Length: 133
Image (cartoon, rainbow, N blue to C red):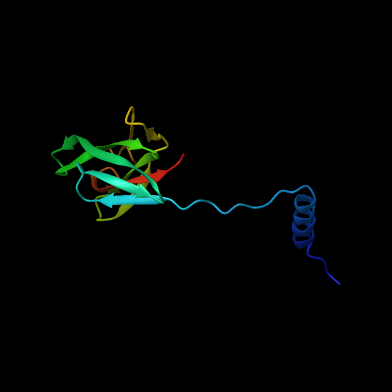
């Protein structure tokens, strides 16, 4: 009879964690606000946590008739990461997310499509990924 060692390992880990009182916790849902208005100002309600956000755009690229840099400021109970949908020459696009968290209205989160490989022709949509980071 063949043994599935991965199953045995998972069972042993579950038994160990149960015996010392550890439990798995489901990840909290996140809210994402997406817009084509790259200077939008708005408010959010992220599962009861409330606040405001403000997008700004910078570095207009006349070759592509698009902005290259997106910024977002977030105030309130959540922090937020800026996201930009960067475009490429063949009509394709891809979403990218900043690793910087904007919070308390004191700093911005930003993403720059300028030097982003072939997705370097500006952006057409922005988003803010809200959570209690």
